[in-house]
Image (cartoon, rainbow, N blue to C red; front, side, top):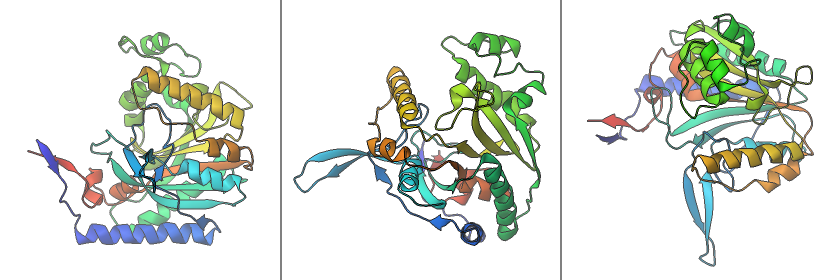
Amino acid sequence: MGLDRDGIPPLSVLRARKRMNDAVRGFFDRRGLLEVETPIAVISPGLEPHLEPFEVVEIGPDRARHALYLHTSPEYAMKRMLGRGLGSIYQMARVFRNGERSQTHAPEFTMLEWYRSGGTLDTLMEDTEALVAEVAEAVAGPWRPKAAARFTVEEAFTRLGLPSPIDSTDARALAEGAGMPVIAGDDHADVFFRLMLERVEPSLEADRLTFLTHYPASMAALARLNPDDPRTALRFEAYIGGLELANAFDELVDPIEQRRRFEGDLETRRRLGRVEPPLDEGLLEDLGHMNPTAGIALGLDRLLMRCLGLDCVQDVIAFSPRDRD
């Protein structure tokens, strides 16, 4: 079995993508956000333990070779811009994640990322609901979103009779409370994401945009902890049915705490035998100068796929690799 890289979507799909892109730009331009561009080849691509970057080499004028990576998100560079005084900004970026190819994943895809300087997670949820509705109208496909729903992660679990992932911080307790077999080596995050995939996501209403808020503190990533309940993080994810569409943070702007989290991510990557990119020292320097900010990343290919009623993300990406016999 090989890879077929010759696929081009039908003209109707390419035109729908153009309408989507125009709608996105119009949406943010009317709201006063500045469109920016940032480098694709970077020193540190994103340190989340589950992400695998593409590695590249830059050859300098002296022929010295320098390791770089294709970014997994434009997040670090955009935050550096924010730390240097830019206000609210957005970007439609090509991003790269190795080892990700399935019906809903492509190794190269388009991510829409925007940051609201002085904004909140509520601001981003309002943005997302309005943007999705506007894009669906512009694309003019068969799908339109119903009014959005909001649940905390704890509510999303307990309404299905599952134990609270906030109270059950032990992997075995969480698995056994859900009637799920315990797999050797699983940690709390492994069990949590398995329950999300197998139980929670399939329960979400197919045509409704759903926001899941207040993730466990251990999954804060680059988000602030909730000052009203430090067991949870100021983070949400947006879903259309069981399809994850977006991930948002009330951004952490404490460089000391961020360094600690990055070092923890690198230790996890080391334990898993994955590549260990260097810390982005420029990000840590600029982070301390950021105003309170809320930021979000949204998968545009997935949104287009849903708007057009298609089942495979490769159907909306030109030359996206897919299996062939």
